[in-house]
Length: 375
Image (tube, rainbow, N blue to C red):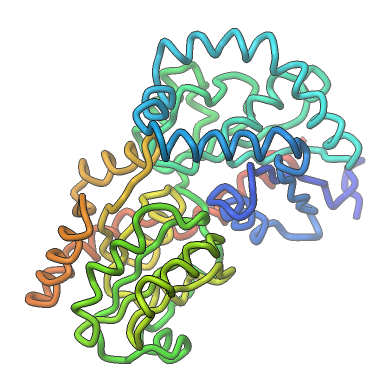
């Protein structure tokens, strides 16, 4: 296909940090709305481009969270650390970005969509990619200091405070678009709770709690499930373990999984589990929250990670969108209250639905197409 000297489809890279992850889910969500006749999506995993660096960063991150979480929280969004990191950005990133530039240019990429800050930084610091249209998608309800303020064609953000933070950093107002966090098409379908429970082989009439540890299965999920175990039969519990197979094995060994307690290994189609649930509890990752909002499910903040998830928690509390269970015992008491007064969850469901932006991926894709085809 060729129009006014432009050949279609255009190759557009959708760059994420690792797989599976919320960044990867967001990239896939946008890709689902890119018509193949106009845009050919090219999924780029930074961990493949930097095979040594990616695992090192992930390993360091997890060790910090496990041993010294306060250090990560300090580093995550600290003005002094950000100032010191600016030297790294100016001196090191132009060199380290060469590998990504080689990868994108070799594949004939004509634009890039970045769902995390590091790849956006790499692109904006490489001279060979200076003319490459760059679309940055913020996948948390906060904007930390590492998102670049210059060199981005368009920013897509989840809410007004994130837009304000980027503008304060120097991002041009006309380039910041309030769209929401992209979720996959399966989360926009009208999925019936009873049908979802039938599909998953769950008891149709039991109050259903879904615990989620994100793509990596992090957080005190086994402890939470153990705390809810005395309620089984009055409730059923789904535990989404992400790609943490070790967690599944540990849970099965320690808890002797019962009829109404199910540990779910990584699933590529989680929407049915959300649809089946009456209550979602777990780590407040940005994509997890966007998916929960689209399903209009009440959310309980449980075992958040320092950094972005703590800041997502601040957003939730500010808008009175979620309760917090600081311990497994508090989670168990909260579930007991829900059983005693089932109607009490209705306002929380409505509040989450009011903040939902189910068509974020479609709107982001539309803006990308509009921008790239306008020339």
